[in-house]
Image 1 (cartoon, helix red, strand yellow):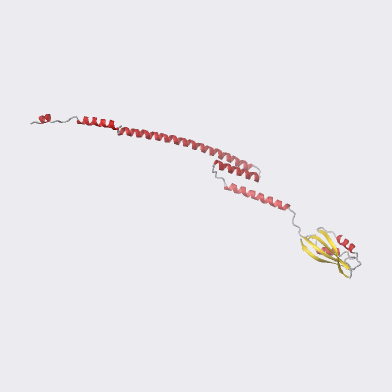
Image 2 (tube, helix red, strand yellow):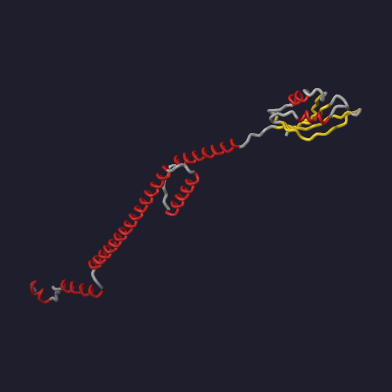
Length: 234
């Protein structure tokens, strides 16, 4: 048998590839879109997500621009206030209140301004010096403490015939700046003789016991001697 006869008698499927292609398309149509279509759908979904993210970033960028502009406006306003405060007269109380109000506004606006520590130190030092000067001026107006003493004198007469009233009058006639006579009394000594015991207050810088003794003994017609019975600092 020849080759052509064999081919003519055998059942050979020459169109099998066409039927395989038709079968593949049939099953693809039954199971859903092809892999290529799925890739296209995924790519489109990714593009939409990217566009959404870009729009979100644009909105955030606009918000940040607004915040920056607000911060710049607040900073400009604060700088103007500081310049006004530096040019105004030195009034510690007013400046303290102004600085405090500025600090409150900074806290309310949540603005962190990097202020100059050197300027704050200079302001604090200046206020300290003003307070010290005011205290010194106030202290200088107070009267200085005057040292005083209380003195009790024993003034003795010559005898029992001496006029003690006249003797006391002579003693009290001694006048000096810083001398103030006080109470007096007659104290018996003996043999009918009495001595005059008289007190006085003196300023130590102006009157001393030597001065009193010298002035009182000048009345030699009535005064025999002068003794210091007591001496106390006041």
